[in-house]
Structure formats: C-alpha cells, structure tokens
Amino acid sequence: MADLIVTIDGPAGSGKSTVARLLARKLGASFLDTGAMYRAITFAAMQAGVDLSDERTLLHVVQKHKFQFSVRGGQMRVVIDDVDVTGQIRSPEVTAKARYIAAAPKVREKLVQMQREFAAGRRKIVTEGRDQGTVAFADANVKFYLTAEAPERARRRQAELRAKGCNEGLEQTQKAIEERDRSDRSRTVGPLKPAEDAIVVDTTKLSIDKVVETLLELVREKC
Ligand code: DC
Image 1 (cartoon, rainbow, N blue to C red):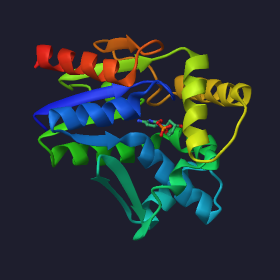
Image 2: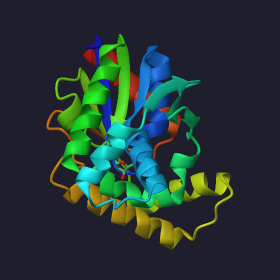
Image 3: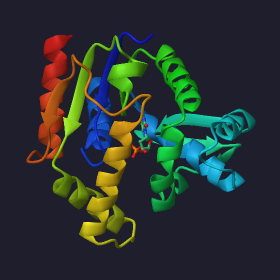
Image 4: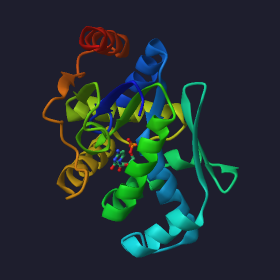
C-alpha cells in the first residue's frame, strides 16, 4: 500500500476532482478519480444495451471488457478495449445513469479492489469519490470531506457544462444534482457520507486555490 493516502469524498460539484488533482500535483502524488471508474462501467453497459438494474449482467460487462485507467497530464484517462473514451464518459447521459452502477454491491466490491491495486503500485496517492475514506481506504493518512451548498454546486456544474458547449438551465442542473445527492446518500453500499475521522471543508465561499492551500497545510500538519 502507498506510504501516503489522502482521501477526498463529497457530493457532485463540491470541487473535489479539481482540488484532488491540484493537491496531488503539489504533493507529488498520483491522482485517482474513482468516479471515472463508475462512469466507464456505465458507458460500457450502455454501449452493450444491457439492463442497468441487473447486477449479474453488469458484472458480466466488467469481466468481459478490458478497462484501463491511467493518469496523463493530471487527468484520468479511461480506455475500454483499447479505445480511449475519456471524453465520452463525461456525457450527461452517462452522468445520469451512473447511479445504477454505483448501487450494485458486487460491482462496487470489484471497483474498490481495483482502487486498492492502484494504490498498491504507488508511493503517494490522492483519491477522490464517495466512499474513499469510509470503505476503500479506511486507514488513509488524511481524510477530507468537501461540501458546498446545492445552488453553488449547480452553478459550478453549469459553468463546466457551458465550457463543453452544453446549455442547461440552472434550475434543471440543481434538480439533477439534488437527485444524484439523494441516490448517493441513500444506497446501502458505499453511501456518500463523511468518515468519522474526516475533516469536513465547506467550499461554498472558497476559491479552488484557497481550498487546495487549506488541504495542503492540513496534510503537512498531520504527516
Ligand atoms: O464523481 P463523479 O460524478 O464522476 O461520479 C460518477 C458516479 O459514480 C456518481 O453517480 C457517483 C458514483 N461514485 C460512487 O458511487 N463512488 C465513488 N467512489 C465515486 C463515484
């Protein structure tokens, strides 16, 4: 297992992906975006046209295809059966359907195992998701839980979508975010919640740089 494991969990739009990537760079650590793994399985299952609520079929999808996750230029690169799908897994359709994969216990088990294997091959990692501090790396050196108020998270998500040329009303974006929150928090396996020993940071009024600086100081203090 890595010498330094920092986990960052939190809801969509809390800033965890950007913060995790920048923090990893400052710490000279590898960055793991576990949401990309759930998105990759979702994409493969959608391509195969299978029933997303059937866990056995989903497991078959996981076993049948070759998934490769690597980091290039600080970004998670996702390759399925030698085809780069890094951009495609970020579509609104995949975002909406990922909750089926996230609620499948056996698929989660497999992904947690892959996340631990990723950590085993590295000296330092910063990993982000929903269950990193609670399930995947319960013994992590430092655990963070980022939150932000829903309207601010919707605003950030909308800006992200706009940058990709996708226009969605703010109200619609906030509704989708709140729907994802509900499904993330209510599933029985790996639900979204702060680990008991996590440091909770509300990013609503903080810039990305400020959040990274705060987390970096806390990591240095603790390690
Ligand atoms: O962080 P994200 O939006 O890329 O996550 C995509 C989906 O995967 C989202 O529905 C939550 C789920 N997820 C999860 O259940 N556990 C994780 N560790 C990471 C993501």
